[in-house]
Length: 340
Image (cartoon, rainbow, N blue to C red; front, side, top):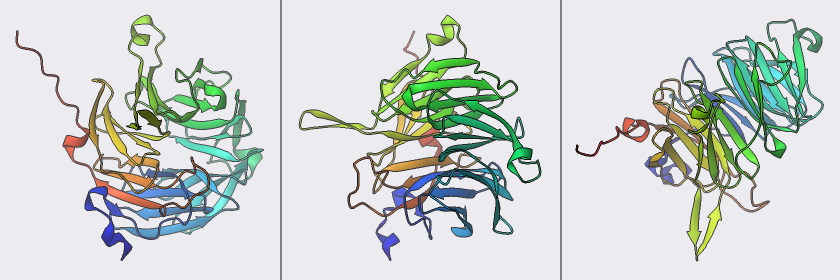
């Protein structure tokens, strides 16, 4: 059996993985259900604890993102320009609406009761999934963006939108007429991922050039003085730096520390407040495409899936690992004060 060769330290490999690149995976907020989107045109629902594939939804093109509504339904964003609602019990789906180009990101806001999608058509759309089926009745608004949308993140009523061209727009979902703030990424290279801090004070943003920026919403001088960026997912070989894209950021729901995943196949855990790396997991077979902590922070789902950063080449098969998380890996270490 192939899985027998997997080092136990990587976690347990889920059976029935997607047959092509994994675009995202997410744990439910209510259970250990895991939703996975893939370039093989599928969204799969797993029970991660039991290692069982519960449902599978086929789409008209590669699926670029997915998220939960609750444990009975979810949403997907696909390259066939559609936004779909997925009903788990009946294995049925319906089209909530469409963009004019592939839909890259999808997020459900519990605070607003709305679905937010971001597309390569350079727009953001908000949908009310409670509306009857049919685009006119479910579409709440369309909001032009400066460039193609690459990543979205929500915390409370705040929405952070990262686009091509290193733009970052920050919205209040209660007033979408214009962004609260328009920013430029403090990193010099293309944005890969943006994720809000669980405490709502800011966001982490990663780039293709082995860096993560830690940013704050509050524009006061004191808050802005706290922002910083750090290098990660890089190595020195024969005197030169090899730098890898940072594809994924996931915050621990209990401790507020966070994991990053890169094209180097490594997952690192960081304490952002104390600017320290807490842990590095054993190397995975290929690029880390996505990461998600379970609702209680006891499990970490890792998508080991080549992201074609080096073009077409032979690569390891796409796999999802579920690893148990030890407190020592994610809990901030208390600062030791020098003796008085």
